[in-house]
Image 1 (cartoon, one colour):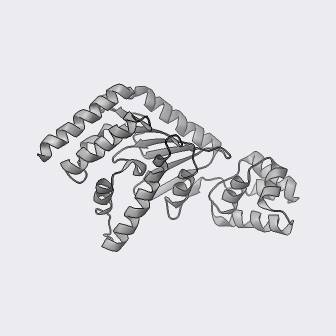
Image 2 (spheres, rainbow, N blue to C red; image 1 turned 45 degrees about the vertical axis):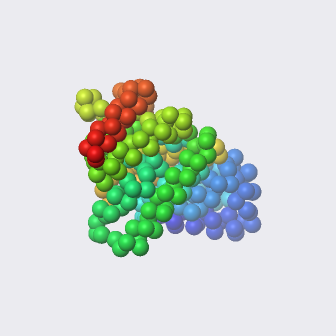
Image 3 (tube, one colour; image 1 turned 135 degrees about the vertical axis):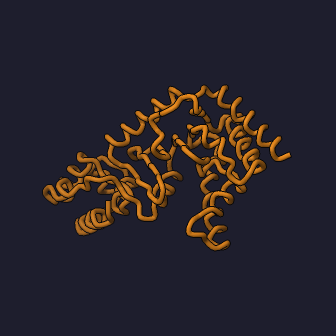
Length: 265
């Protein structure tokens, strides 16, 4: 969704003399959901759009011109990053490297140092600070609830070398031991699984509909359509059913960390 739809909604709301909260009350939505639509970060459902048309006396304009495609994020993670900070539940799938909110500083630096085209040391440091700030959502002992599915490739790819990997894997183990996150592994023995195409993040909120974010090479997409989110959640659930149980996943992570430790020594 481009910002045009959100801009037009904001203009119609302001022309009607309504605050975001007043419009939210009239349409049985939340103020934050209205704000996200106006900012171009969310797409209203068809029912939401019909209620907006009714409240603003705009005929069927908002319903008729409802974007038919999911949100394509220009700065492709920024919208998802903002939503991540508001989520009460996050379910991550990582295909090739550790999800950002679980990365140690050394692992994150190793990832960022391989950026192409190469960025300056100053830019790398700026991105590193942003990535580490994301991880602070885990400082709260309860919220958000975080489940993580890791393809075994995440553990076998030695990003930054054995020492960095040993620290990174044990960081995930400690988070799981504290009950802060759940980590499950999809082993190579499984073969093909429903999430092999892309990295995926599913997010739920207290006051707005869930979203999904998928990412590939130089591409990220924030999925707002209820049917798409439901499909991706189904894929996640199916893959989770094939993953190692928590206890066995932790045993594999510990063994992997020990192996990297021996290689470093």
